Amino acid sequence: MADPQNEVIELFPTPFMYCKQVLSPSQCTQLIAQNEPSATQVNHQSKDLVHTDIFFPEDGGFFSEVSRRINAPLVDMGNLLFGEKLSWHIKEMWMNFLKPGGSQAMHNHSNSFISGVLYLSPSHPGSRTVFFRGFGDRGFVFTNTHQDTETGPFNAEKWIAPEPDVGDMILFPSYLLHAVPVNQGDVRISLAFNAIPERLKAWGYSISFSH
Image (cartoon, rainbow, N blue to C red; front, side, top):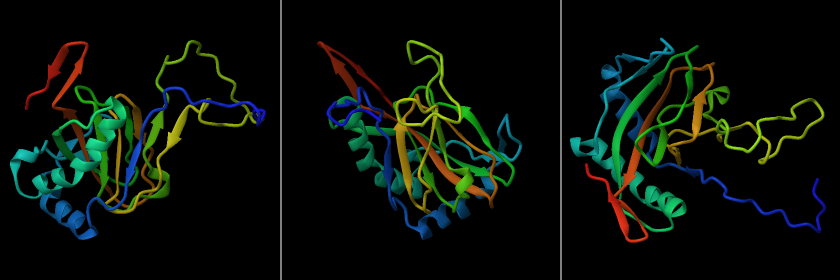
């Protein structure tokens, strides 16, 4: 433990947003019923994980409503990342059906800034989303991990997200590595998405993102 007289400052913390009840249980059931038949894409690393085709908010119907409900938390998360309340656009959505015994390998999401997961079904406590410290993001790669060490936010190699209720959502920077351990419960159903801002601006230059 650090001396209580010494101030510990958390440099450059990573934002992670947990949002309760973005969708109601009945809305989650509706999404599952409408789209489960299209979940035919088998994950290339786990045959017990299948995905739907990509959806877009512009497709209309229920996905437009889902996009609308996600928007306000997205703007708040973007404000944490970039210091400005920008307009955000969900560039793609898809649904995941993780069968018993299946898992999701460690990965991150390219070509986006904020990624999220909406939990549409109950999840087994052992199948919560796990986040990993990025490889090589420290100046040294030595570790000190044994039975006598205490794990804290500065030396942990991974972090397990809270156990979600149906309709809850998480938002995180797209570069974060994450995975889902072997599913020990019933089919675990989620909706994942990636989002981009309208533009970023610095020192007289701006980059705009179109859709």
